[in-house]
Image 1 (cartoon, rainbow, N blue to C red):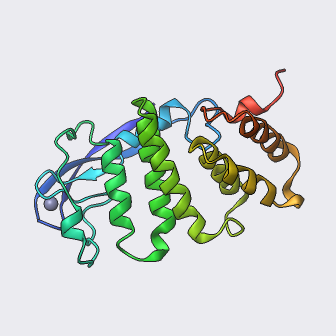
Image 2: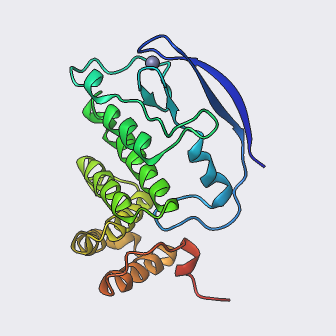
Amino acid sequence: MTTLYPLNVICKNCGSPVFARQVMSTNEFGSPDLDLRPAPMRRALIYHLIQHCPECGYTGMDISKEPPEHPDFQKLIKKDCTSDSNNPATEKLYELAAQIKLLYTPEDYEAAADLFLKAAWIADDRHDREFAKEMRKKSLFCKMQKGYHKQSTDYKLQMIDIARRAEDFEKATELIEKFPKSKRKDIYEKILIFQQKLVNMKDSDRYLVEDTLPVK
Ligand SMILES: [Zn+2]
């Protein structure tokens, strides 16, 4: 059961009141995707996590926070007429939020990568393959700024999947080969073998983590 709580936010850019929602609780049943996209109930939350000011277009996870002091910020923000307060998220808004994140500091690459990936997930739901591919490429680019080796094991696996689903099979193979030998065991090894098979077949479809496990 997912509980959402109404939240009145004041846009820090223009001072307008914005209706938003806060997630109080949720459950998760089922396997996530290989790129760590959550199973259905938790997945639906991404439609409520973004805040968008309909007056000025400021968009982010928390628009009551100071916007970036970057000369491009005011040029970048735009209103999204397809967004409404009950269902604020669109793939374009997540892309915009990611672009705004990148205006803060380079340390926000990781957060921007996450927002680009959420844009891809919404594009997946809308069957917009090309946009999803573009967002995955941007997400991977941002993640690479930190460096593959500095990522946690789960995020290394996630990056392989992002590359494959972006149809960058060469990069996916490179990342599989770079995966630390010491971690190549158990579930990780199964996932890597599964990924390599998909890459060899140039398969960029969505698969679940549980798809990599043998059928009982
Ligand atoms: Zn505003």
